[in-house]
Amino acid sequence: MRRIGPDAWAGLVMLLLCVAVGTPTLLIGTGMRVPRPVWISLFVALLVALLIVAMWEVLRPRIARACYGLTVVLGWATVLTAPNAGWLPILLVFTATMSAYLMPLWVRAVVIALNSVVIALAMGGGGADPAGAATGTLFYLLIQVATVLSTTVTIREQRMRRELAEAHIELRAASVVLADTTRAHERLRISRELHDLIGHQLTALTLELEVARHQDGPAAREHVERANHVARDLLDNVRETVGQLRADAPDLRESLTSVVRGIPGLDIDVRVDDDVQTAEEQTMTLIRVVQEIVTNTIRHAEATSLRIDIERRPDGTVRLTSVDDGRGAARITPGNGLRGLAERIDAMGGDVRLDGSDGFRVTAWMPAR
Image 1 (spheres, rainbow, N blue to C red):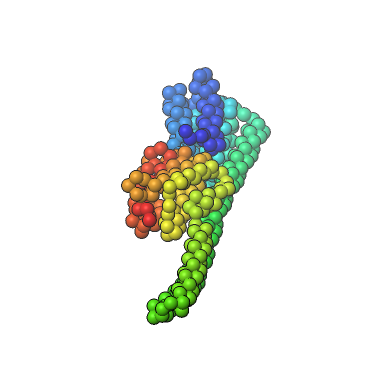
Image 2: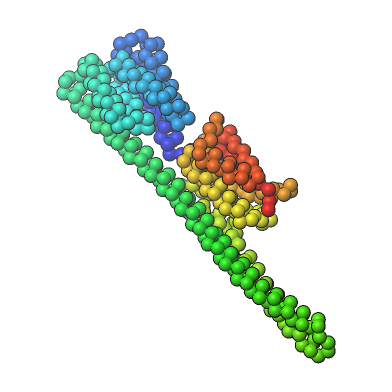
């Protein structure tokens, strides 16, 4: 079950405060400059628009900005048509705060300025003396500036943390790939030395046996003994080299654990079945696939946990399944990262499926080698 994040709680509190400041006017209905049903319609429309704008991440940018513009206008209309509604101008503070998520800096400044003008007009029209209207306007102006600035700083900090996490996972993956590449070069070096050593010993063995074949008695036995000694040395050398190659082979579980270790803000659980055996190329592919899954989760999912399972299926394929507790996606439009992921799996003879109905799920499989 997905946990509710701080942003969701903040949006819920904001909505409850909007309802709270408008409830007295709804119940009492005094000081309205329009019929009560009209004002109620404006207030309800404002709440609906705020709720839609709060879901700006799932909307197209143009639609989100258009909804925000409607929210600002509805806020002005709601405040101006009920100038004696007490704390009702706080609604304009909320609309100004939402601009930090959608609008550039200059638009935020314009919204704050126009909101302040509307608040001044509402207070002046509500019978407040000039000094009181000025003080109230200044008070709401300072609140708007403070909330917009603090929200901007929070958004920037979240973006920097996300970029740091992405850089972290990329660095981890690059380190693991580099280490495995280094091991691959070392195995190549060992294989060359093994070839040279075995070639020399096999040549000596062949010569000893060839000489023994043309001799009889003790002389032949001496050459056979030498051949036996060479064969034993050859067997020991092969065993030693194979042992080094096995020790140097990249371990999938260890490599993936190293890649995802210490990612800030995301709890990652990687599970690799004991019977999963992958070739070096498959290991490199799975490392890059996991890197892209984690990066995609950090960028888009708003998730707090991610689980990745790698198992060997009875049909002989290796299957990777990842699922997070994020917001998912009703319509999946693969970007460069997901397309690259699919291309890597396809190059290994496998396939990928994406599902955003409950969190975001990636299922990939490839033939075992």
